[in-house]
Length: 458
Ligand code: SF4
Ligand code: SF4
Figure 1 (cartoon, protein in one colour):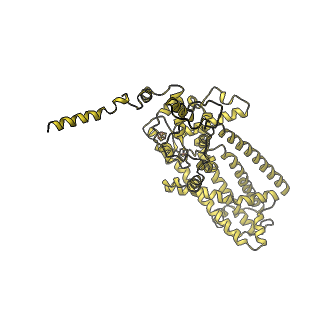
Figure 2: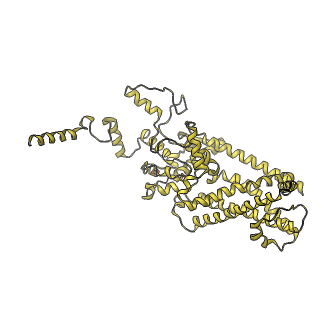
């Protein structure tokens, strides 16, 4: 029986490893569809951000209750999965509680008991937090969890992950409770672990009256549910918004450190303007990293965005904090910065899938602009940066919007008529207004005249 379990376990580990490797490679390739951009400067600032915002979840604490519960799930899940090390060793060696046996051998059972009780305490916190989040998401009708983009899979995904976590925690409690009863009956193969308080109180009463063979089945099934659950969870997360649990860290590290609102010029356009104005051009090389290639002005599809923009999209938690702060969205416009991020991810996935299957990839006749994001959404943006400020994982939807607007304006002359008038004024009069530069100080001349008249009449 033990050998069968070992073989099954190794098969599960190998399959998970293979599927995970393939999926991570795909995501990496999809992110690499984007243009190069240099985000390797200012390392100390970047590490500071990563520690405070990604590890410390600083921006989450703008909403303290949600932040504490989120922290409970995050820390709980991470810490509890340390127990996964013992699960892994048990599976590999076909034993039960390998670490407990080892610690028993060196008289450290107490340490094991305390650690397991901490895990169980955190498991209870995770269950309560998940239940609260399920109620908040499905019953309390909080507006930011709705929206045109939050239908079908995104809605299901948000609920599935919470249910998944509850099942994993219940599996631990069930395993520990049945294990304790088996220990009290001195069943061979179940070493003494000391009392595990939470499972003893909340779960043991359900299993107390089971026969020993039935209890062994319950304990084994709970063990397998937990271990397969962890592996399935690891694969599932890579298809889910919960990929942010891993990507929030690099995403925060590589975030834009420029002052908010500073618009990124295109080197090629800057050079051309400087040459037109007879100004010296310092750097003849393209800094977009794609030497020898004449880049598109702005972004029409995912490959026109930077790799950081695409990584942003994969890091989006779909929390809706950006959309809930967006003045365009709040005043009933079609724009939702969360949808922008989800669209970029969906398009990157579509292109990546097509390339992997030997299809047309970016040449599939579709593009991010038009098939996913409309002009109406893009031109509703006020460039206020509220979405960037609100994002807990330093995502920058505005950067994508501006690049796509740049494409519409510069390559398709698709900007609204009023904007085109402003652009031509800037080109001819060096200001948004329709006055020649020579008239710009006329108001001051008139003031001077009035002053002169006033002086004469004194
Ligand atoms: S920058 Fe644009 S998308 Fe972001 S909050 Fe402001 S209006 Fe909305
Ligand atoms: S962009 Fe940021 S704030 Fe907006 S939904 Fe994604 S994670 Fe949340």
